Length: 249
Image (cartoon, rainbow, N blue to C red; front, side):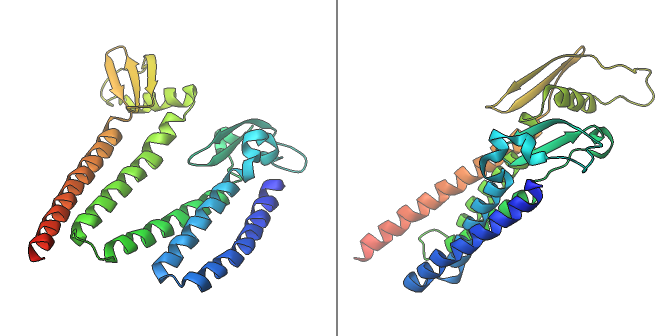
């Protein structure tokens, strides 16, 4: 009950309270439209994250966040998982094996991602349109590469690192493909090794090993390499522009 009515109510109240300082800042500073959208996106991201973890209650009493599935409690709560980032509260019931867990704080998560998207677009527009000694395509490349790297980490790497041992075992089974023309019916998993940095989840089989995050980590490294190379180009352009300015003077 609290998750269904508490999050929207507190979030709406927070947004209403935030309107006052926003209007004061807008009237005093007279910012550009992209700057205003950046502030709005940042505020929505903060409110959405706070709502996604039910303003701290998800960490202190996650069972209360889930509540009851029905009024008669026909499907009792089995266990609850809480992820700090990306924020998620998953409630597992007795019928979750068929229908999956419920996510009572999904509204806050979607609000956070929407605000983050607005913030990133607004900041990118500000960085690309401002006067600079670096070319626009270099700045766009740096921003795009870092954005893709962050997206791969948040959506592809971090969720796998947060999986339980049982779920990781299932992922290792899925990774080990069995050709349909063979008679191999049993896959033996000897060990599962997990490291945070560099991120890796290594499944050890009887006939070899496989890293579940190898391709995603490689994508992150490629994006970071592209961003680093373009940053070097930007610094070179700044130095050359500075020399030209000095010679002109």
